[in-house]
Amino acid sequence: MYPSGFTKGQVIEYYVRIAPYLLPHIQQHPITLKRYPNGTAAPHFYEKDAPRFTPRWVETFAVPRRAGGTDIRYVLLNNLPALVWSANLANLEIHPFLARAPEIQRPRSVVFDLDPGDGVDVLACASVAFLLRDALRRRGLQSFAKVSGSKGMQVYAPLNTRITYEETQPFARELAEQLEQAHPELVVTRMPKALRPQKVFIDWSQNSDFKTTVAVYSLRAKREQPYVSLPFSWEELRRAVRKNDPAALHLDPTAALRRVEKVGDLFQPVLELRQSLEAPRRTRTAGSG
Image (cartoon, rainbow, N blue to C red; front, side, top):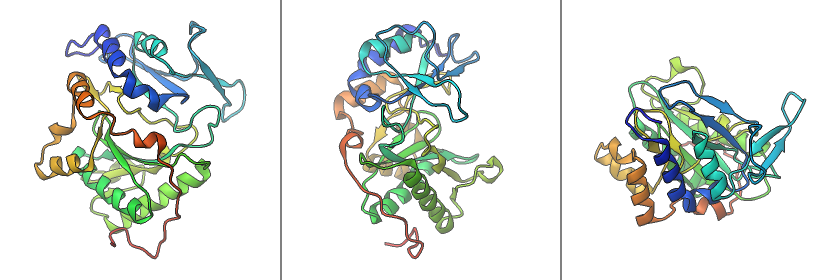
């Protein structure tokens, strides 16, 4: 599956072993498949509609198309057999909605996707993650960070309440733009890549009913060897930044499994913590305490 020699059997073995930690985070979330049938060095494709050959024991959920027409029947990877079936299809990366079926208009979290531009790396993302953590904390919200398994990071503020994207996306956008105003040398919130060198792009638009975010504990297919999207504590992130050690935040499947067996699921609070949004206040600056 990977130029490094990591095989489909190893992909399946990884997902079997990580399943107790991964499955709670994707339970009832519609999944976009990202399949690499001939490995990561060959073309891949995204698959939203469940394949024709999807077995009956793999659950699906119909989601209306934004442009109308026939519903999209998304796969739900709710159990180990479904997860193994997915891995056997060379679905290396798992990309769930932020909402659970059947309430697909109710996101479980606000998410900030941090993407480093040219000239900066995951440590710059960690620095922006701290700014987000502090800004969210001032609004009474706890947050949790994970590396993407590629170049960037995501910061989640769990909600687990009856809220809609019409509330979460404006919140995320305004908070991100406040950080951009306070830290223009480091943060950018606009899409053009020409604006991103030496900065971290905060993608607030992930808070949409038609977008997916890579799942915690998913493999990634961005490099010659597999890395894993993993949660880290704020202290671990601070230590990596202090030591200028980006390698500490890039773990392969073997290291990822050792880690979760030792520290458990650091993302578990994202599943249960109930929090309410407070609208950002423009009278506050993002750097104020």
